[in-house]
Image 1: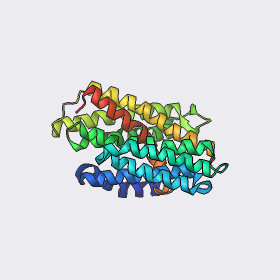
Image 2 (image 1 turned 30 degrees about the vertical axis):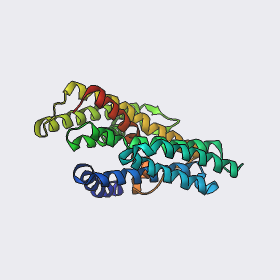
Image 3 (image 1 turned 135 degrees about the horizontal axis):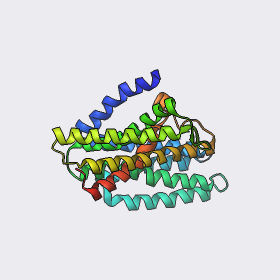
Image 4 (image 1 turned 90 degrees about the vertical axis):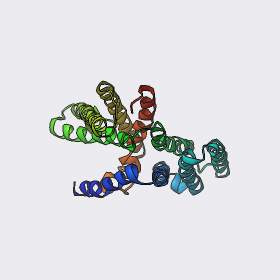
Length: 268
C-alpha cells in the first residue's frame, strides 16, 4: 500500500501537468514512450525479448513511432506499419524455428493496437473543448479499478472470473461500475459548472457505466494473457502497480471506446 501511495503522490501531479498544462509535444512523446514500454512488456511476456531480440526491438520502435505518426505525420503511418509487417515476417523466416506464431501476433498487437489505443487522446483532443476532457479515459478506468478493489475487499463473496483473476468478485465489479458512474457525474458537474461544458448527466451516466464494463474487460483480458504465460506483472516501472500494461490495461480499452462514443454522443 505504501508503494501504491508513493506512485500516486508522484504520478498524479505529473499526469495532470502533462495532460492539462504541458505542451502538446510533451503529451505526444509521453504517449509514445508508454506505447514503446507497453510493447516491450508484451513481447517480453511472450518470450520474444529472449528468443528474437530483433523482432522485439523492431516492435518497440514501431509502437513508439506509430504514436508519433498518429500525432503529427499521419501520412507515414500506413507505410510504416506495412514495412513493420514485412520486416517482422522476414525476421521470423530468417530465424526459422526461433520465432513462434504467438510472438508474431503479439508483435502485431503491440505495433498496431497499443499505439492506436494510446493515440485516442489525440482524437479526443481533436473534438475540441477543454483539455480536461483528456482526463476522462483515466478517470473512467482508474475509478472503476479503485472502487472495485475496495468493494471487493469489503463485500466480495462471489468470484467473477476465478480462472482468470481469482481475487476479483461480482460485488467488486458492481462496486466498480457504481463508482465509475459517480465519478463520471462528478466530472460532468465540474466541467459544466466551471469550464463551460454542456454535458448531459444522463449521457454521462450511461457512458460511465458502459466504460466501466469496458474497463473490466480490459483488465481481465490482460490478466488472461499474464496467466497464460505464467507471470505476475508485466513490469516494475510503477513499483507495486506493475508495468505499463498492468497500470494502463483498462485505459487501453477505455480510451478508444470513449473517443468513438464522445464523437457519436457529442459529449463536450
